[in-house]
Image 1: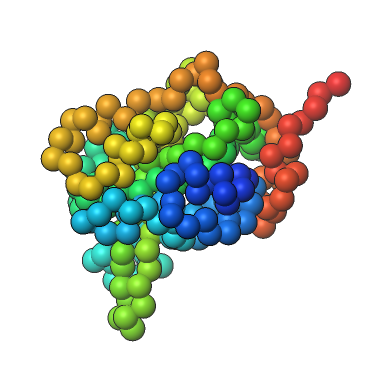
Image 2 (image 1 turned 60 degrees about the vertical axis):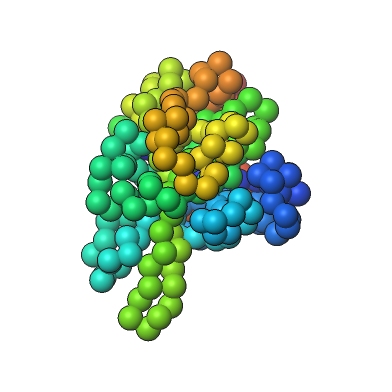
Length: 226
């Protein structure tokens, strides 16, 4: 599961890490929530390997959707079965993307309170979620691009709070996931392993994160116990 995340790396770092020809401005985000517009890296077209950064709705909208209000918020897709589900099958075949991030949140319930925790790679390094994207057009001809984040079994660090975690890609994994359509889906499936527990950090943060209207550095500051 991945229901919130944050991206605070500067634009030039994102551009260099993902091989972008241009370095668009990326505003730091500390509490990114479903249905919001998020930064996504994908190929400019199916026929080349030029990468672009664009903004998409977080929550995939299948192209046949008639009423957005009745659509479940498809923010995650199970990597083990996404190619079998009609809602994700087309995107899994040829519309791959990656979502830059510095960390994500999970929650522990204590009574009636949901206590949030940050999960990140050591030193809060920039990384990428594996994702799928789609393009949807409404009756007026307006186009909406949307995406979902692939998930896999949780590693030992995340499993304390949840049995699922987002698929996190290293540099080679990003190259493999984004490259123009490969018929060898078996190779790509090797990317769907959980991230190395030894390279992951976890700490508790304020319940401020629970309200998506808050989006500032306080959302990712550790709670200090005395």
